[in-house]
Length: 309
Image (cartoon, rainbow, N blue to C red; front, side, top):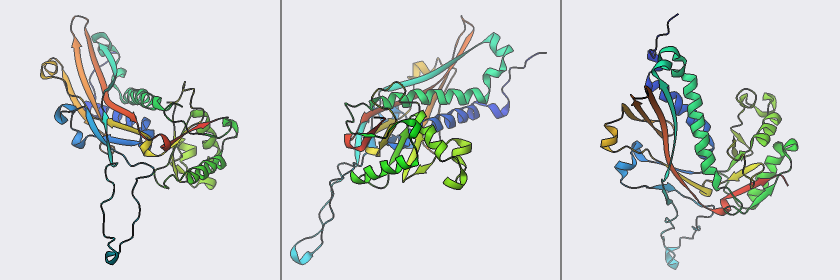
């Protein structure tokens, strides 16, 4: 039986990249917990003419105070503090995921060009990016910690205790996020798996708890191997600053590529670069997806590391 190596219309490059982007954004979802700067209108670094991107930055305490207005007493309007509303982050990281295809594979194994593989690639790239970004979560950068006990006993009551501590520390009621390591995330999912208790089928069917105790909740493997994080973190967006913008190759490099395109996820604004090139001497075609980004430590007090003991 002969294999026909033609990509069906529904598996065109645009649709394959849509699968990659959707999977990438789903895996990198915990970044929503932080101050994220996405370039306007998916502009490239080349168009922006700088590697520095402005990222929204609102600290736990803005430095602004509520004032009395009393014109008769000379207490008129005064300008508030607006200097803390943005910070510059240098984009200096490039992570890419390549895959190759020989002429023989292209003729005999069309499975290599399908949507499930695209989803795996998108999640794999995102996992590497978020692990890199969250590597800044160390005791040196974020000294504050909160003991939550062992994973086997972790449940919704512990999350409300975390909320109590955030209230004591005067974290704003909005913008709180809970990012848990797999063991603690799983324990919390088990505790909320019944629809009649939680009011949603997401924990049972999608292994996802959107919000709990006034916090967005995420599970991640990004802290694997991080000795400064046992259970995860609880944070406010100003803790970590992240910027993303695609990079366009030089014209001379672009001329040698078979294809180069920038694909942007409509909802999140995140862009990934697609490149396709060939090596005729090795009878091989190479494709890759690339993410260009940067990050920086923001406000130390805006993040608590969750420890087992």
